[in-house]
Image (tube, rainbow, N blue to C red):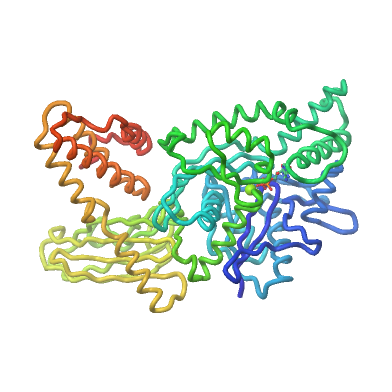
Length: 579
Ligand code: ADP
Ligand code: MG
């Protein structure tokens, strides 16, 4: 059985797999690895997907392209007198990729497919359905920027990094801030423009060329426009390193032509940094992704923007597929890469059955890990007894979105003994921890501290594997503020707070506040940043005190930014977060 990784793109798609310690890309019968995400109906041939379809469209023919933009909607495309949805068209592209892969690999069963980070539930589930139609089982969707970050880590090692993924494709520009640390990759902010891509450059070039020839682009017929656009793309790609025909263009001219696009890019760039609470200098690297990132003028623009060179990981339009290919290696648990985790979102809700009143027949589902929570996720909830002198509590675990617990998928249960007391007077703590591999660990602890647990895995794992996961999960299970290191930091800060007066006390109060909010944010990178910053501020204060200097705080208050950031994002008043 084989697993393939697929970059299902707006303009181009491609597939990759992991073997012999590296990623291999899957070519078609002519050696082309990119499959244009386009479909047309040709007389006598029926529906045709890929290169031939793109060629037909470039020559002014009719068909469907860029349908990924409408994924999750009911938009219809007519092909040969029949209507198709973006999901069905995507299924055709996936099917073509599967066919290509089957010429190389035995029995393709599973696929890991990348999707934009901003894709919502519907778009994600339609992507999965498309795969199903194509005969592929999707174990996992991964975010495109996470895949790119994974490719970066394979090359640059797994040190702590703040990255910006700059994905400039055919129709879209997607920016993502990504934090990498330990064995985690987490997206912290996204921004972009769904209508800013290589196609726009082609249009600008075509218009520019018309103007210099004294023509009006808008007045050309559809066939002429199509022909000119085709030439424009060829001229552009020539500057980006491909061969040429027709229209000629210098790099300087293209830089000028692209100016309006660069202006928009700069705005988006500043916007995402603000969202992520980062300054340009905080970015360790910017990674160029997407076909349009092949253009030297784009690199030049980014170099000016950053004040240093962006990172190019080989062919920019293959980086996402490269990451998807690496991920299939992780899934196969190849020793070299199995330790890289990707944070992701949980696509469904996990919870326990709870009753509001004695005698109720059907309990409702108390969500423990909500749909779309960032993974790995961990949560604790205290439940009280329902009956007088109850001696045991059974916690039933379900997955799904239905109100009544039993209408969801039953996963398992755990039972704990409790001391017989009046209803509501005895309690248990329920801990849910769901990790990146789809393994759910549920533990219940009664008031005497006795515990029972269950490990639910959605795949068959060996004993040793389970043991390893258990260890990882145990580390995740303790809420951040109860972890030794963080608890000590808070104690240290609190002691300082008590000793201080005036402005210093006020600042310390705010720092503690920010720290606690960060610890409770449920976002790994914030938890980590809160700990680092607290450590740093305390060390500075202690040093200053030793030297008997009157230091309030490090002048460079990075955490001021984050304080606002946290307040905004969580949408609640931090002053009340402690109740
Ligand atoms: P998507 O992610 O949107 O599916 P890609 O990342 O494959 O698409 O990017 C496609 C875009 O890249 C097209 O607009 C194409 O013209 C452009 N492109 C491909 N090769 C080059 C090149 N050598 N130089 C400049 N642009 C290129
Ligand atoms: Mg892409």
